[in-house]
Length: 447
Ligand SMILES: C/C=C/C(=O)SCCNC(=O)CCNC(=O)[C@H](O)C(C)(C)COP(=O)(O)OP(=O)(O)OC[C@H]1O[C@@H](n2cnc3c(N)ncnc32)[C@H](O)[C@@H]1OP(=O)(O)O
Ligand SMILES: NC(=O)C1=CN([C@@H]2O[C@H](COP(=O)(O)OP(=O)(O)OC[C@H]3O[C@@H](n4cnc5c(N)ncnc54)[C@H](OP(=O)(O)O)[C@@H]3O)[C@@H](O)[C@H]2O)C=CC1
Image (cartoon, rainbow, N blue to C red; front, side):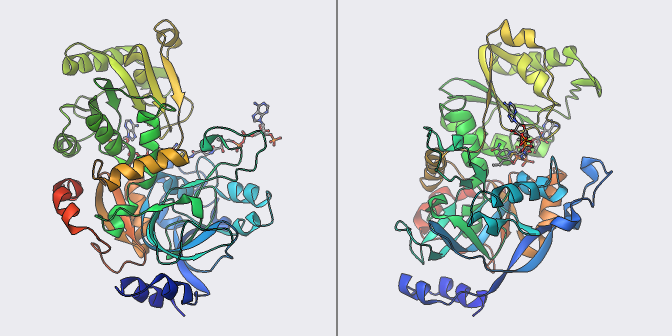
């Protein structure tokens, strides 16, 4: 039995759930990995010079054992997220530490602590097998997976699955991720695949769409409302391309920051009007490595006021971190919110706290999304209210190049990876709905 037989079953229109359940599973499959014995390979290099093409491998790996509450999924397509870039450059720390720590928690979790890490936190595919106790999904179901892995065993409880003490990001803090021909997930990560999208389009939004939804829309994040001025850094990037859509769809006013005329054009094509090209306008928030320049914060704020008719920012959608955080705090209006989920340019932030406390601003930390938020974000995709921002698709063999492009900021929106899918465009079930949204679905492809 090989993965080719699985693909034949997926592509056969007549295959039933019973047919999928009867398919013998292969003993091994191809997966994108990083290797534990290479974690020092970039020692001494600057972050920018660490090249994911050197650390990312395509290996034949054994099929993991299927445990209670879990599912094995044939992955048709996945996507590259920035967390896979972090894993591949072993920053801010090696993810093998996460696997080792997880492995200590239970007999079942020990499987994850291996000398290789199968990465990837998105997938669209077909359920192959479910473990004991799984009733909601069956072999043959077409699914996407969100990347929240929780144990829900903590007796003191919580009302937000992101607060679980054993909360992990699948494919980053656990093994057997989505950049592979087969993935192992907890079955409660699964959600229905949107019918009007191809495999690679369906796989692309997952992680970033859910994260942007919590960070910007959910009451656990900024709780955006109609009319809010929302400053969106990297507005055509992975997170930003969804934040921009949420702002527009929710009646807010996105102020999109980008770094090229091409990216500005993408934001315009999504419907944004207020756009700042940070390169063209030459903002330099740091005079040197240790000194910020408040004059530059003011110049940036003045430009925002020009674009908003004199108003300041209600919500900053932050993720670049050290380089921009001082400016983000400054330009926020009295009582406004800075919501942050990352620190791409450095995690030791510096800002002038007088502008925070005197103007009663709030900083909110946000991370991925709870089950409900991930579901709501996927539902908006399925209803055609929010669209994938896929710009380019790579083969599994070229995942290293895809991660390199994301690391070097050479990409737009999201980049996809074909895993089992032999070509792009497959898996669409609702052509009529697709036709209605085709321009929006293709928006990022045409740049
Ligand atoms: C969905 C996609 C998401 C993304 O893309 S996010 C971007 C990528 N992700 C990242 O960059 C984050 C990667 N993760 C990390 O960098 C680390 O993961 C953290 C910094 C978040 C945590 O660090 P750690 O070393 O894992 O654990 P500690 O919590 O710092 O624990 C160290 C020791 O400190 C103790 N400690 C923790 N809190 C307290 C406290 N409040 N008072 C006293 N001690 C504390 C602990 O117990 C422990 O101790 P003991 O070393 O002895 O075991
Ligand atoms: N906590 C969580 O749950 C999540 C965290 N993340 C993290 O968020 C970060 C961004 O992820 P994602 O959006 O997918 O990545 P992308 O690279 O797709 O997009 C980020 C965009 O941010 C802009 N940017 C990058 N560096 C800077 C800088 N120094 N100053 C200003 N703008 C900058 C760039 O846009 P431009 O050049 O046009 O300005 C870039 O395209 C990563 O660190 C990632 O790990 C991502 C998802 C979930």
